[in-house]
Length: 562
Ligand code: FBP
Image (cartoon, rainbow, N blue to C red; front, side, top):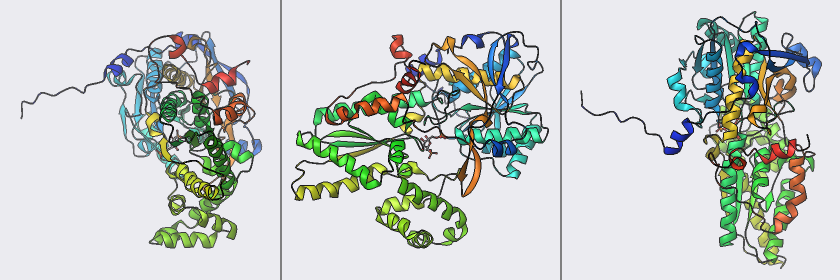
């Protein structure tokens, strides 16, 4: 035995202050749960393919939307309940506060209620790995970023064996309800599990919570997913700093790729916050049916115009998912998805990338094989990498900003030779994603996530299953937020995944007819040639309310005049 003193884990000054932050609960949730009623609004239907989805979800399709309001509730579960919670998918600021809100909601209803956290994402359920979440543990994580309290993972519960195992593990541990905190794929899973339990007559409620920095899990009833606010504030700070740097040094073009696997919401929001010279929006590229070459031409045109004004500098924002929005690339990726899924064993048996490539070329149409061959080697290799567990290409590994630069350079050299360009092009690349996913939640996200968690507790205690926790009217003060639940099947459509048609929650892409994109469109020509940069600076946790309670530009514009 040594006499070494155990040094307690130190926390930073900011962490100490953030632990003291008391999230503001919407007024309706401040009442005792026995005085909050779940009002059932009218029956719902899925966003499309209603008949098909109804058949796939016979027990949970068409349930009514729920709104909580003040009133006597004699139905609320009075007996002691044990709830399991799991974090699923990529980290998003505020996950710990969802758990804290859930815990507080359960305890307020009955101090004997228990909460356990499955470890490492949905695989924690399958492997029966969990820990009890007690007050002393949760108190250490209030208002902190990250998912480290119980970690996360991307395992999908999809096979009949996995459903059976989920049921067995929950029953074995006497769990009465499961709360899944995740994005569109994870909440699709939540819907499938809820339906399965109903069909099996298992009395375990399943409720989801909308999480993802990507902002693509939203609709009229889910105004934003949590984490989007904080992550975009962090990226906007960094992009703003780079804008100031380019404007000071005036010698580099910065190409910044921003996370957002399938939608360009992050890029749009950060673009509106910082007003750089070029903001590419994947959804627009798709709508205009643009080729990679046309995107390159668009950027080159601005570089040349700025060079004519002796401005050999600028900032370009590139959404992570751009490549999949380019129709020809999308066709290539979807053909690759099918080929890789159908020929998994053969491809895995091939020993080197050359052989794999040749095999894939032989399965592609001549047109797509030529497109693939025209890409730089490293991009080709990245396209051949394994998919994630949801069957998606791992676009976060594709360095689109470098691909664009590799295609811009020869174009500019050619123009130099024929005398149509006389500038200097020096490019620097960045990828911002992980820098923002675990940031300390902004006050907006800290309040929003706490409310989502508390609200999820009320949903399960009111015996509701197959619902997504919904907190709305988010541009208003948190006290006035509207709380309730949205049936998960209401958000579903049919999509092709891993070569098969599947019911999934529809991803919300950037709406090109909505105000946020229109604002960009009105201003981008001015921003391209001038230096209208904005410098949003770091997230403000303390100080004047116009800074500490600022929501996203997206939400503000979307909800103006509503
Ligand atoms: P979720 O959709 O699971 O919230 O994840 C979002 C995200 O941050 C994307 O923006 C990014 O493409 C992806 O996760 C990267 O995930 P990973 O680190 O697991 O590769």
